[in-house]
Image (cartoon, rainbow, N blue to C red; front, side):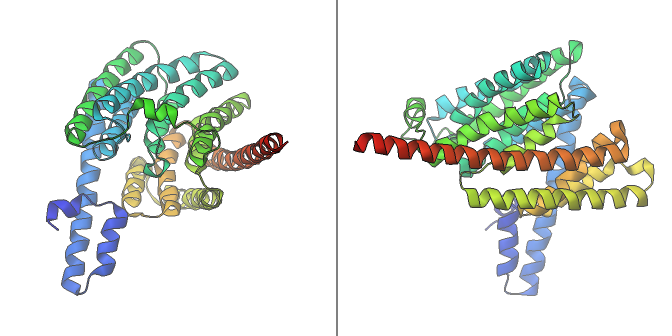
Amino acid sequence: MTFYQELQLNQAGSKNLLKKSETLKEKLYHMWVYLVKIAVTMAFCFLFVSIFSILFGNENSIVGVVVLLCLMVFRNADLGIHTGQSTMLLALFFVIMTVCPHLANQFSPVLGMLLNIAALAVLILFGCHNPFMFNQSTLVLGYLLLYGYDVTGKSYQMRLVGMALGAALTCFVFYRNHKNRTYKRNLKDLIQEFDITSSRTKWQICQILCVPIVLCIAELCNMPRAMWAGIAAMSAILPFMEDMHYRVRKRIVGNIAGVICFTVLYFLLPSSIYAYIGILGGIGVGFSAQYGWQAVFNTFGALAIAAETYGLQGAVSLRVIQNVFGVVFALVFCVIFYWFMSKKKESDVTVHAE
C-alpha cells in the first residue's frame, strides 16, 4: 500500500493497520501516516469552510460545512444506480437542501413538519437506498444544519449562490469518480423496490417521519437548537433494533461525557481560545473510530458555538436535553412503528388464510 493509498483509509482502516503492525518501525510509520492524514484533513476542512465564509459571509459558513461533507462522502460513495441519474439526483438534493429548510422556517411548526417530511422523503428514498453506506449522515444532516442555521434577506441570496457552487462541485467530483462504474439498476428500480414489509423501507419511513416530528415537538416546546434533537434522532434510527439500542446508549453517554469534558476545558482555558475547543473536538473525531467517542467529541463543536449565544449553562442544558429527547423519542417511535407493522402483517396473513 502506497503512502497516498494509506491516507485514503478511514479511522477504522488506519487503526487496523496499527494493530497488525509486526515491528515497532512499522507501527511508528503507520502512526505517522495517520497523524499526517488527520492534520491534512483538518487543515483542508478549515481552509475550505473559511473560503466559503469569506465568499458568502460568516452566517453562511455552514454552507461550506455541508458542501464539504457532500464532497468528502460522494467522491467515494454512490447511490447504487446509473451514474448519470445519480448525478441528477445529487443536483436535486442540493435544490431541496437549499429551498425546503428555508421555507419550513417560515411556516408554523406543524406546516414546517409536513414540508420537512416531503423533503426528507425524496432525500432518503432516492439518496439513502443502502442504509449501511450511511448517506443519511450526509444528506439528512446537511438538511438539518441548513434548517438550524437559516438566514434571510441578502444572506439567503448569498446562500443560494454558495449552494449552487457546492452542487456544481459535488456533481462534478461525483461524476468524474463514478462515470466508469457499471450499474445494473436505475431510478425506476429504486421506486419498484419500495416495499413496506422490508426492513430497509421501514427504516426509511422511520427516518422520514420521526426526524420532522422530533423537530416539530422541540419547536412547539420552544426549545432552541431544535436541530440538535433532529440530528440525534437521525443518527439513532437504524434498520435493526439491536443497533438502535446501542446507538441510543452511546449517544446519551457520549454527549454527557462530552459536556463534562467541555465544561472542564471551558473553566481551565482562557476565554480567548474558547473557539478553538471546537477544533479540538474535530481532531478528536478524527482519532475516533467508534460511535461513542465520536459523540463525545462532536459535542465540543456544538457547545463552542452555542455557548456564545446561551452561555455555558444554557448551552450545556440544551445539548443534554435535546439529545436525550431526540434519541429516546426515536427509539420509542421505531418500537411502536415496528410493532404496528408486525401486527398489520399478522392481520393480513390471517385475512389471506381465511
